[in-house]
Image (cartoon, rainbow, N blue to C red; front, side, top):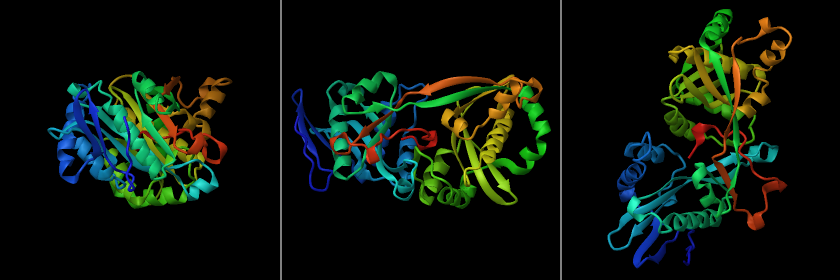
Length: 368
C-alpha cells in the first residue's frame, strides 16, 4: 500500500483490498450523526455498550475537537463507513519548568472500530498509519492510547510501547469509616462537601492555572474544564475542600460497580499534602453512604499516595500502636493498569530533553 499525505497534512488515500476500492479520508460535517451511529453499532457487543449520543457528546464537548481528525475508511462504491479512528488533540506536562510553560503537543488515539463484515482486511492498520502520518506532519510529538492486552501486539507494530499506571486498591470497612467520621466530624462537614464541577468551573480553572503542574497531566484550559471535565464527570461523585468560601481543591470518584469506586480526577492549590489527605478522607467518608455492604473499595493512583504520603501515618503508627490507626480495618492491594501505550513521533526516536515520556498520573477523566 502507498500512503499519500497532501500539503495540508490531512489528505486522502485510495486503495484496493481484495478487489474492492476503499477511500481513507477525514469525516465531513454532514456525516457526523451517521458516524456516531456507526461507532455505537461497532461497540454494541460490549458489556455496557455506549449509545450514539455518547460519541456525539464526546466530540461536541471537546473544545479541541476537529472533524478533520476523525478518519474513516469508506467503501468507494457505496460510501459506506467500514472503519474509523479519531485523534484527540491535547497538551501534556512533563513536570519541569520548561514544559510547565510550554506543554508538549500530543495526540490521543481513540474510538477505533471496524464494522464486523469489514474486519481482517487491514483497514485499522491503514487508518492508524494515515493518522500517525497526519500527526507527525502537524508536529505532534507523542501519541497515546489505551488498549486491552489482547490488542497491544497490534499497536506495538506501529512503535507503541507500554507505559503502565500503578493503582492501589483500598478496601475500607464501613464501620471504621463511621468511627473516623464521628471523630473528624468538623473536618468533613465544614471543610469538605459535595460539589458539581459545573458550578465551580471558574474556581477550578484558577486552581489549575496557579497550582503546580504534575508530571503526566493533560493541560487544561477553562474551556476544557467547562466542557470536557464537567461533562465527563456528570456521573461522578465530586467533593471540594473549602477555606471559608474559597475552593482549595477537589476530587472526583467514579463508580466501578457494587461498593467500588475509582479516583478519577483532582487538583489542589499549591499541592499541600494535608489538602490531599483531607479531600481523600472526606471523599471516602461521603462515598461510603452509597455502600450497602460492610466495606467499600476505592482505587487510588499509587503515585498520588506516594507523593503526598497519604495514609503513611496510618501505616507507620499501626506497627507500634494499633490504637492509633486511622482505619483499623483498611486493606491495601496493588493493581496495575497496563493498558496505556505511548509512541514517540520525534525524529530518530529521540525523546524530548533526553528522557522518555511516561504516564505517571493520567487521570481517567482525561482518557480518549
